[in-house]
Length: 257
Image 1: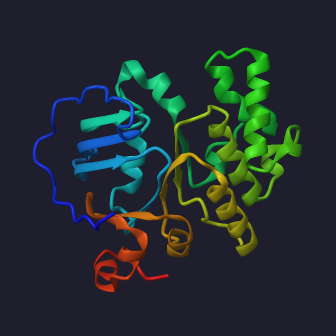
Image 2: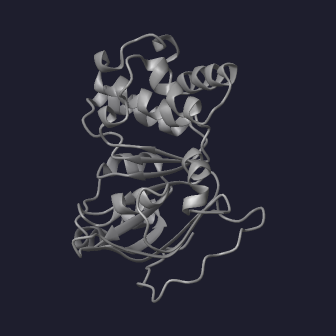
């Protein structure tokens, strides 16, 4: 895939129609957003993600990565078009969108609030009204995916940071999402827990968007990298090619791993 240097877009387009099979699982077109205090955070962002792609979102603090991620399941609403698995991200579709986009926060304590691991992982499916047998199947499958099968009755707040991060991922996997979105997944982990989490992310076959400052993670796991700065995508292309461009990285607050 060639390196693409992206220019800011003009006015946002009319909402796109539902794409036919084979089209991107995520389509973002001309997305702009300004916070209530008047700070513009996104300027005409366009990004298209194929099913199964794992993409690193990198850039300095305040570049717009987290703001973009919060648009993917409707927590924030800007101007432009977002389609998730062919569904427009709008108020009517929010329950379906939030099942399809699994958002994992940087701090797992923001995601784990129930007494036990089972209750945390079961919360989403229960909220969606799935029958008890289906909820239990989803919980057991999600915990198996993150290697935490024996933790059903453990107290979430007694777990290590690495264990909490795995359980936080399980809470969104239990919804069987189409896209997994993670914010700084390796932050706060010791080297062994970091390696273990990278192996976990590599094992998951889901489409994945990961915002991170961990450039070694980017090099080890992602074939495609998108560089953000000042609310714009400034480069989008193969990770190995972009990581070789030291001047590009330095210009946008990044370092070669």
